[in-house]
Length: 251
Image (cartoon, rainbow, N blue to C red; front, side):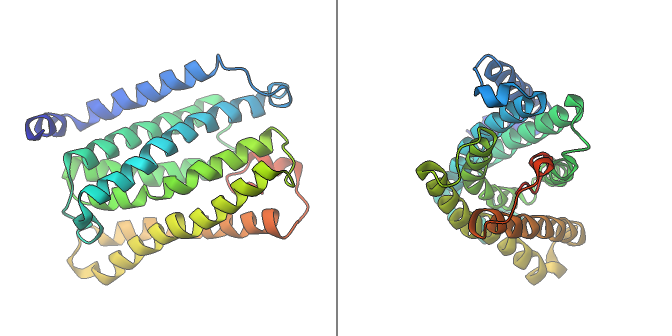
């Protein structure tokens, strides 16, 4: 395993590009899967549906993987800067490939303006992950950050149901929205705020702490705004706007 890891660490960019290409192939394969009729009648909804299905696959894979990495090596939670394993390093390579592919999909699809918040989020993640891969620092931090993908499983499922116009009073939507809000608090807000606290608490001893802290603050603002809109829509019954479906902070 150590020999394999040394080989991967020599050319991280190559492996990231290979993973990006693999997710692009997955995207193309999913285009052969029929969409719900109500989705297929609108070009933007069709693109969004396929984009979300790829994101759902990524979330199922990396959310489970991140938890497995920490269970295998619990010290990563406390040694954010220095600790990592071959499995966790590979996880960051795979996830970096996904975010690069997804950013490219947004840009080249022609929906960058409608999805600029997604692009901002992706660029923040990409630079942090690539830094970890090339310097071998903060790999554990990137793994903890990927805890948010546990929530993303339910977040993406919720958005797919909304695109398919599944009633918000239906049993499936009610179950998904409850799991979504619980995992949002525990895995998304919990992971983000823990990393923010760690950076502040160890600020003087960490490399490039200022840049990482700024990144975390920006992400925290985004996820808190989204959380407010999520609660407003799913639990307080505010009226939805048609064009909100094209925004990152979708109601």
